[in-house]
Length: 90
Image (cartoon, rainbow, N blue to C red; front, side, top):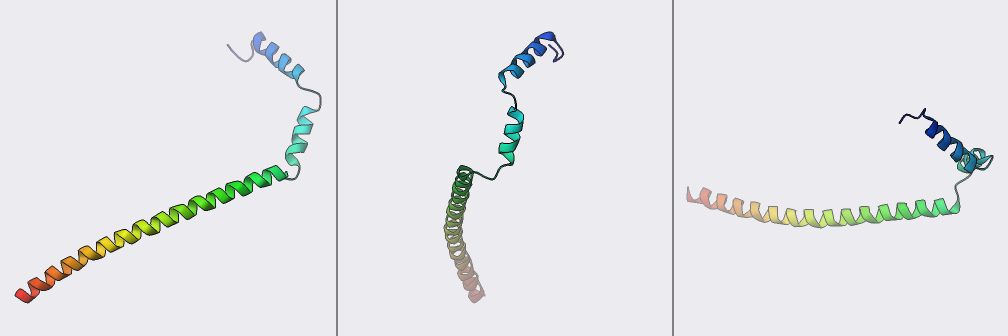
């Protein structure tokens, strides 16, 4: 079924009859208006949520990398001690 078919034309005409006159102008005027308080509140909530998520990720990362650093240092300390023992044995 192509968009040129009479059925599509009837659907377009029916849809156009459902829209009140001046609808497009009202939509464009509302879209160009200043931000509503609801929009500002939603934006603030999104920003706060993003900040909270970022803080959680940074906290988790710092703890995980701290534990990993401690584990790595313990491993290298053991390797250094064994190397020192080998050096003294020579």
